[in-house]
Length: 180
Image (cartoon, rainbow, N blue to C red):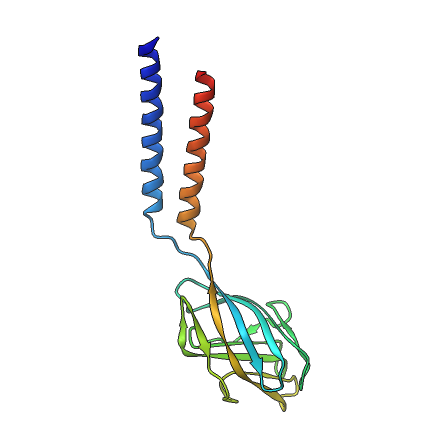
């Protein structure tokens, strides 16, 4: 009986070590994840604001998605998404530009020093750098304050490692229950 118990424990340890080795091997692969940025305290010269998020690829050189809302003020606010403002003339990591047509609603945010994995300060008080433009092209409001901050997104390899570890733990628990 004791010999059987030792073999059972050895089998559990062997399974655990094999699973741990697999999880470490999978976790050592460099994870790539899109970057999500949140607009923080973005304020225009008419006292209104812009809120929302945008997504870039992990290399920070392509705009993938956006969901930015501006508030009514000296010009009408607008909800910029790929459906409502499908045109992007962005030069990420330096400039984000999305618009609904020409001439149309347009928002441009220029990043001081360029966008980094942590985020960036928005270039302010410059009517050619960061602004929102009214559809007729004659009126615009200028960003006077704000930044963008990276939102934490788990890397795929971290999620995979956690999943493998959870499955291994459940397998060990199930095996232990059967032995009892």
